[in-house]
Length: 403
Image 1 (cartoon, one colour):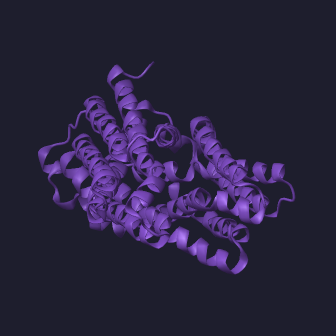
Image 2 (image 1 turned 180 degrees about the vertical axis):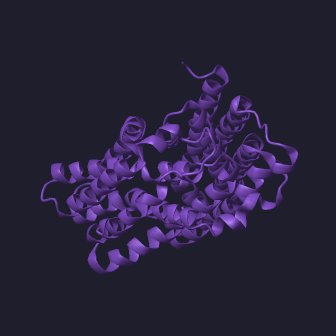
């Protein structure tokens, strides 16, 4: 029996929000070189400025669970979308027209804060849709985010090549992100919680931090976020410095990784429904560890790229499946997803400097070996993703049977 129309509409709305979130973040990153030149910043000064975006996201994540619990996913996503849109406009105008660095920082903070709030709320809504569909679909939502980043990067590259001013480009993206988000949330699932449940203090956020299962899921997500983020940040540099290829070939290696991630998230749902979370994650995490090792030790470019593809396929499911597991019980989903997101996003803050420091000592390529060194012990965390024995009636029926 096919799912009701309103569930299909909610699925499409959530996918659109994921894609728009990726589009917003990638639109700014695509114009970072132009902003650096416009503001006449050194690499160190640019790094400090970029911290404002990370700071906004980190500050938003702990509060996002409470906000989503109080307001519901739709209103939280709407607020986040408006924040990202306003941040894009301010960052673009401040960098391209005013040349005012503090205002750029405020804009980036707004983008980061909106992205952080949206990260929790859209994953909560995605998990609710997944429960009603009765099959695994979370990784496909994260694939939509990846496609949004590809679109943002492509549009940004075209805008830069055509000398489109930063302010005009980012303002256009802001209209798409803000307007698209407000349109998409109209199709979210209705919030049918009782008033007393919606206004319960904090939505159990502090209690979620004391739950061993939630914290263990967060640690697994942290390792997989580090696995993904290390490739995003350092793969191109590692190929240029370590394998001696051109910058174009280094960029192509990153493209192979992103493509493998996107394909893996699109087709991985079939494997999850057939074999369950635990078996699939054990195998894919082993793929990621092996792929990273092959990337480092390969004696030919073709073999190194094969390692990158294996790494991408192996890394693609950890983050979305962790979010899905955190939201197994609908009434506790906002608080638990918030906790898992906070722990997981630590990797995006600590990862780049950690790999960079190792790279100073052993070279960037060899520094990538930290990925398999972290994945191997993290395999012991996978059982934490098994659905709880006592769950809400509609919670992950397929997963409960397969895990």
